[in-house]
Length: 219
Image 1 (cartoon, rainbow, N blue to C red):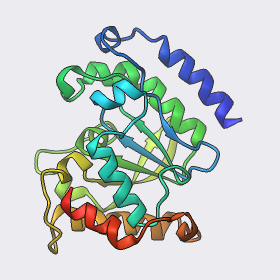
Image 2: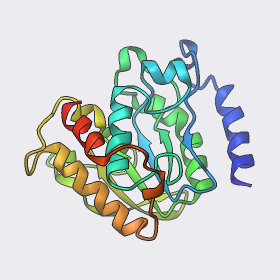
Image 3: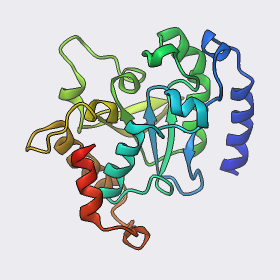
């Protein structure tokens, strides 16, 4: 049922001409993950070049890094998450989407959340956070990340947490205590322990965990 409903939304999204981003897109980047098993919705900012080419969110360098962090935390990108963005078309030069562009796409974003009805929502980066929370000037993503909050979508309250966007981690390689990468590890562990305590993907892992962890440090 969820997949059928989402397919209807996808078709409407793919024919959307609601903002200027539609003019130059190669593909609408609608979602990734298994809608039938996902218990968490992860919301990013916007498609980049590789996402625009493939039609899948988070497949570039930042997306690959995110996948490794998720795997290290015991969260399956394919089974546990339904991944979407605040806008479905790539902004020129990967710039931050405007409020008008986000508003044009909001009906699709809300419909995806309404259909999935997740146990929790991960707001990945500042753009996703600001799409649901009004921040004052003193509040930054560094101060609010890692904290459970409640956001409301179409009158329904959802448990949510903000994490760093993986593109930020690409510029911060340190794994020292208190570093962005170490904080990301802690936040994802919190999410796993809180939302997916009964899920174990050990049998899904085919590579040595130490090798995967090493690639996180060097990315």
